[in-house]
Structures are given as structure tokens and as C-alpha cells.
Length: 481
Ligand code: CMP
Image 1 (cartoon, rainbow, N blue to C red):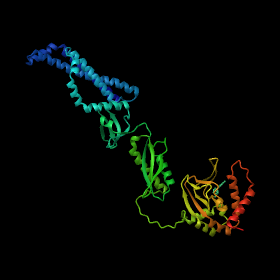
Image 2 (image 1 turned 60 degrees about the horizontal axis):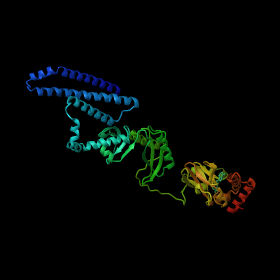
Image 3 (image 1 turned 90 degrees about the horizontal axis):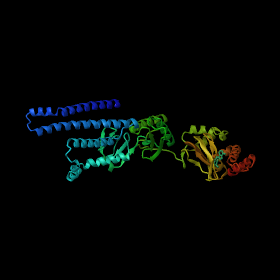
């Protein structure tokens, strides 16, 4: 389409040039007749008539020069576009035209007025220069700032830029010798003088760069951060125009008055469409929240009446806790009432992915059952961490320190968001009092775990000896005869 238009323009120029050349030829050829014709119009002075004819010739030559420059422009920059695949900067095109015009002007002038001394005209006219300089101060400022913009190329057509104290943001459409033309996201055109742009900081988001955006959202304090982060990250990465080259980052930016405040950082394939993409992402978050049962925070006043335990919330939904404890193999022999009592005493805690539940070497007087999620048991060996086991829902840990009174033997770290049920010393003592056989199965499990803890190079004692040792240590510690 563009190519056809420029071809038409070129044809038009050639036709115009041909017409002008023809008229020029006629004027020159029928010079005497033309003079007679004008004389016939009562203009008696021959000199005046000659001037008129010369004037007509000058106008025609000027027209021809204009057409010639346009045609040259087409040819030179058409070739440039063909070779490079993009248009040459407007400023360069304009400078080319100005130089070509000036040269043609000098040529025509010296041909038509061979006696006039052009050099003297320009060099001796100092006053003319000062006046011109003052008059063109702003224009020249823009012109030279435009040249430095073209040379530096801090941004290009198609980039998104933000300029000036008023922070005009838009897509660069053109950089001319006078101004930068940007199209704002309200589809307005803003022209910023080159000279003022040169003085202001300009924020550039290049078209071929991976530019990022931040979208903010929040959740109620009761919603799990690990879940919110996961849900939003998955929802955002699938949205249109979100780059697949970098995974979006979702993180907590503030614990606000009404809820937990998050930011979602994502990268765009086409930065110029960031308004649409921001909106799409907010929409995706809303739907993802709906599906995942998450809630946006809003200013609320909540009166919370809760029974609190020293370290955490006492297990609330008794049924689920009883069910969970009943499914733990070491508690299988307990009666329904005993499991119920244990559930009553259990304290529920929630850990984020990567949080440490138990630290090796700490004292400990409670054990834990994994209610939901996963934890990793790991030990430090020669400054490096070695994973010993992974425990899932229904598994227990922390029993070694609880039953022997020794320090914790390993680090236990949540792999994903994990809820645990903490059972203290007194609750376990009650269980042992009524189920002394439990000690035996526990001591067997503990001896097996100890084997796993020992480094590969350690010569370990036999499993049955170890188990017997643990059994008597538990009995001693809990005062079981
Ligand atoms: P405790 O020593 O109190 O604290 C760390 C806990 O990690 C430990 O109790 C066990 O419950 C657990 N643990 C240690 N070694 C193993 C293992 N080999 N397999 C499973 N759990 C273990």
C-alpha cells in the first residue's frame, strides 16, 4: 500500500517535472514573442519586460528544483528502505532536502545572475547573520538537539517513552528536526521540542527489550501467602502478552492495614500494550481467586473471639484432627477417647515453604504430626546439608528429643506450605500411661531413624541393641516401669 503510494508520487513528480521543463523550453524559445506579447499589454519599458520573463523563468526553475529534490529524496531513501528494511530518520531526510535545495539554489542563482557575487553577499552580511541567529535561536536549538538525538539514538520509533515534568508517556511515532512526536495511550499526539527533551530525563522502554510491569493486589490475612502466590503466578503466566521467557514474580510487599499486600512483576512481549495486559492480569487474578477460595482484602473491623494457646492456635476442626491422628500408625492402638484427648491437646501450626519447623541442636519437648503438606529431614555434614527423609501427611517427627530429652537430631524444613499438629510432653505421658506397649514400637522406629541419621562412614551399633537402648531411655525419661 505504502509502496504503491510512493510509486504514484514518483510518477506525479516526473510528470510535473516534464511539464515544467516543457514550459521552460517554450519560455526560452519564444522569448522574443513573449516580450512582444507583454509589450502589447502596455508595459512599455523593455527592461521591465525582461525582468518579468526572467522572473517567470526563475519560478519555473524553482519548481523544477523542488521536484528534483523530491525525486532524489524518493530514490535515495527508497533504496535505503529497500536495503535496510526501515525508513531513514525524518531528520536525516530533512537535512538531505535542505542541503540539496541550497545547492540547487546556488546553481540556479549563479546561472541566472552570473554577475552577482554570492560569496560576498554571505560573508559580508554579519548583521544579517546576527539577526538570523537570534530569530532562529529556538529553531536551531531544536535542530541541534534533534541531531544529537539522532546520533545518540537513545530511543527509536516504536519505543515507549516518558518525558518531562508532566510525564508524557506514549509510543514514539516520529523524531523530526523540531520535535519528538509521541502517541499517548489515549490516542493523543504530543509534540515535545527536541531542545526541551534534551534537558529532561527520559524514561525509555525499548521495543526489543524485555520490559517489566508491576500489578498490585491484596488478600485477607486469613488467606495463605504460599497459596496466593502460587495461584496468581500460574494465572498470570498464561495471560496474553506475558512473556514466556521469564516466569512472573509474585511477592508480598507489605502487611497492610486491611490485608496482605502483594505485587506481581511480569515481563511483556509488547510493552506498548501494557494497559491492556495489566487489566487482563487483574481480571485473571479475580477469577483465579474465585476458584481457589481466596479473598481480596478491604477495610474491615473484625471482632475475633478465640481461645489461644501459648505457641499457636489450638486445633479447631476437631473431626479432621482426630481423623488425622487416628491414621498415624503409632497411635493406631489408641481408643477413640484417647485419640480425642490427644486431638484436644494438639496445637496446629502452619509453615511457609522453606521455613524451618525444627532446628538441629535445639531442646525440644514436643513432637509433630504432618497434617497437610511435606517436610524434609536434613542434617549438616561437613558444612553441607544432606537430606535424610521426606515426610508426608500422617507422618510424625520430633519424637526423638521428646522421648529421650536429648537435643533435636536434625533440621526439619517445610518443602511446601505445611500444617503440623504439635503434641506436648504431658499429652504423650497420658498416652503412655494407658498404652505402655506403644513405647516399644516407638523405640523400634526411632532406632531405624537413628541409623538413617548416621553418616555413611559411621560404624553403627546393631539395630536391636540401639532399639533396646532407646526403649530404656524413653522409659526412664517418662518414668515408665
Ligand atoms: P528430633 O531429634 O526430636 O528432631 C529431628 C527429627 O527428625 C527427629 O526427632 C526425627 O523425628 C526426625 N528424623 C531424624 N532422622 C530421621 C530419619 N532417618 N527418618 C525420618 N525422620 C527422621
